[in-house]
Length: 182
Image (cartoon, rainbow, N blue to C red; front, side, top):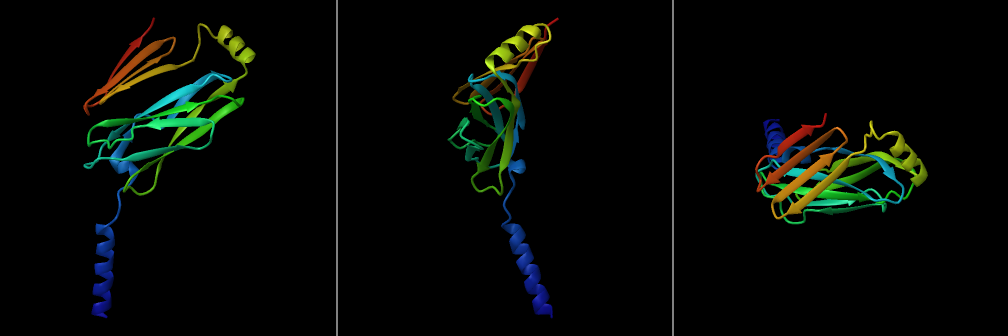
């Protein structure tokens, strides 16, 4: 009986020693759902997700869109601990209606996957133009520009009421600056 108990304890301890980490333990995303807002049909919309390696080992990732209507580009080289990488998802906006797309992110040697989302609404050109004309003062359209060079990621998000700039440089923490327009 003691041998069986000892064997079971040894097996349980061995399993916990070799347990893999989960994505949430090694990577932090700046946002999990990127709202593209109102999008004009056939005008591609881009979302950029920034990933910070919060683990102690380099991260290697792959990013796979849920369908052919979304293309992705991502950091292909290992992301060192404390440094950042990106996933750039480009939605073609060909189909009208609600945008509910996903990008599955997998990290080498990490259990499971992380899913990030694209949301919004595609309007036909005439409807988009009418919506845009009617919402000049209360426009909720968001424009994001992301520049990636070496270990530097600069993002600028503009709305009619505010501009938010964030930058990450050589693995340092992301610095954000928001300016609210009056």
